[in-house]
Image (cartoon, rainbow, N blue to C red; front, side, top):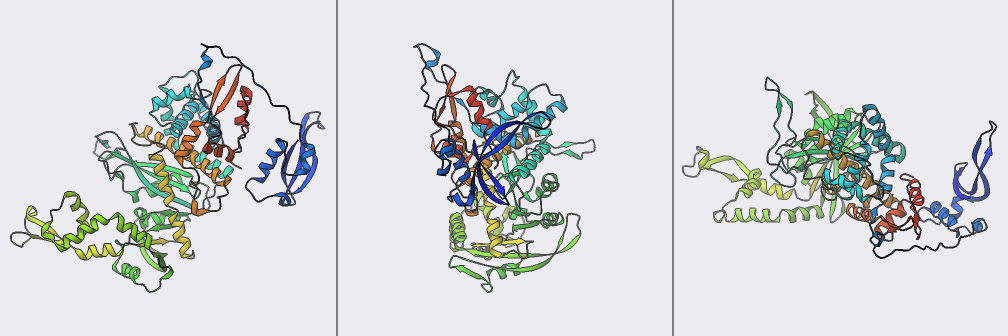
Length: 609
């Protein structure tokens, strides 16, 4: 017997049922449910705490139901089992060899994402002779749990309770990378299809940002040219603006993310590609053809290019992007700094907006007229942070203005000062502009003053003319979530430095990292849902369990073999691991387990409600 919750005229209703076997009219034995007790509407019993139905089912199974009327139907508790086994001195059983068991949860996530059936179908279609899905699993699990090189990850096969690979050639790991790269778009589409179907993904908001990853090599890739000298394929590892300020070749990566913090797609570009040039190709390849309803794209100022924004509009979607105030027109800056029209929320925050008409050019060079809302705000917190982050430079500018004769400017300072240089140059000996070796630029302290004046102000432009100003600001601030994605990829998942070399293997490596990141986000979302934080957008998705804590907790979920085919779980009382298990309703009573019972743990795991 078991408790279930059904819909009775649209109202959640509890009842106690029993599974029975009957013979149907065709003479076949089939299963049916027999109602033992109609308990009543869920609202009559729900205590307001999370997961009442799941807790009720468990309490009935344990013999102490939350609803007293169910007590007579509980099965009598069987006596606790006593375990007896003998270990002799000198026996190998004296030493424990705990093995990872967390892969049962990770495998269920991959199955719900549809990747098991994808790899199985494509293996048959391509006549591959090795177990490509098991290699892919090992690469994904290893990236999430213990990031290492590809060959070292294959050696982790022995770390799992059930070896993932059987009778394999280690070199096939590189063939697996090639397979993943060739099918990257199909893999991403399969994952998104299942997230829409099973997890209810229908993003109203899609975030986009760009980061880069460096390689441990000094030499960038050369472009491949045809006989006429035309570029047929750009080199991928190129010198560019490394976000970690390393003078090494890099690769650019654009990432799309939904409003639950779960990645949608990635796209890689040569390292010298400017951020705003990545958006349209990434949209066309990964987003435009997905079966999403209308969404609002949110991106930072590096993407604010009207060719990009018109592409978004032409696809029937909207945008909210920041726009550099210092690169805006003088009139736009004056309007921003003018206190007239501001709505003061507190002494620390104010905002205002207006609708503007613009004439801009699309990607084909055609002039277009658009309307957009411009929202500007001033935040004391943002101002103080900007001053704090630029304090040394601001102090330097002030001293340079007051006593310029006392300063020698370093190369690094000169680079920072370049934006404040006047356009006029003079020869320090004759007063005439002649030889570049004899000239120095004047510091335009008016520009420097404008720079300091802009601190604390932020400008956002959007296609959503009727959206409330504060709602626009709040939605834009959600972009900070994607920065955490990059931190997890670069930190916990150790995406960089990249040691793979070919463009195909680079793409495969980044996709493996993205899949591992999706799995972390799914776990975090379940934790958030379990803790009752789903409706609190201010805390986003990572409250309660960071990526590194999930990584550490899953590494503690191990099982140790004992004599007589008995097994015991390790560290399942660890607070973080216990929370993950509770979030997925994985019940592990304090007992020793037999092999068949271990197999049943995986079959009972539900990833999406």
